[in-house]
Length: 458
Image (cartoon, rainbow, N blue to C red; front, side):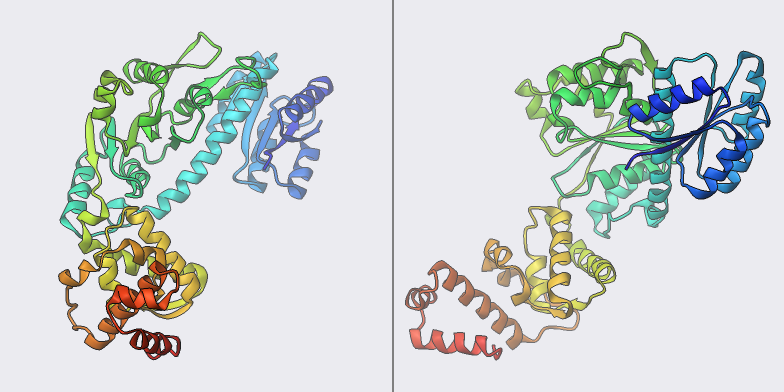
């Protein structure tokens, strides 16, 4: 969605030039010559940013800015001023303006300033929303559990969150590395500043440098305007570099320099810019092996691995599975207006002994799927997806754990028998003779059991 801008300047030639230039930059722009006309537009239209001259012929730009913010409190304001009125511009900033520019100015410079203002405003808004969501115990959003392995992670985060040390989060896919990074940020002194995410594995190598460090206009084909890099956007806040193991060796060298010197150089520029962003990196790769294979720089590894935090896979904290099932059941019932009340003992036991290769993400997706399809009632073993049942060895019966209220033996046995018959039919491609052989039972017995299953009497 395009950002909408309002330009108020009684110098007609400059006003028209700004409207034309900013429109070419992809913004929706309207321009007027007086504060009165500008305020009328603000009452009729929604604008993201106001660019106003402080020395309007008939009114004070500061007064216009004050009235504009009363109409739209979230409006970003940039003021334009001559050299003789810089004191007024400073006063405008004290009153809430984002920045000021002195005339005469370069259009490219003001274009970069507007882009940075809008991106900064959006990040602040997103982070305020995230902060509201992260006010649970320990400040961890959906990192739920009471097992000792996950409690150890919580304890370590409590100790290191408020430092500026670089952190390397290790863990398999789906364990919640980005959620943990957010939790660290929102428990730190940088919590009011931006939390910026870069997925190093999702951005093509040729674009990742520009994404991280920014670029200047004309740096490469398609660079029609200056772009602020993620390091600058995360200034005073936190930059989360996910899938750091996917970064090319060439770019690793440049990242190492930023971590060492705390300066960035935009693509196509020779000018250095100081940055103060805390870096949290994450990977599901074995970086020690990557170093041996010359895919990852050893010096960068030690720069990132100041404080390592490893999130245990779900199979190593199985006592948390029941808690997570209940949590996601409640969440997706509310989101989808469904009434799935619980998992029955057979389904619960199956899921407790499943290996969860996709970790918490896999469990969350499964519960969402079951809630949407089941709609109401109790989830039984037969409701679980067939592909999931095929992954699970029947050896889980040997490790069966009784719940506090015990189990209904016949129901569990019937459910397990039903699952085995379904697997045998799939394996035999529906051939009942072959299925009976696999189950080592008489064909007529199998047919009778299938009939009962289809009648819902199993």
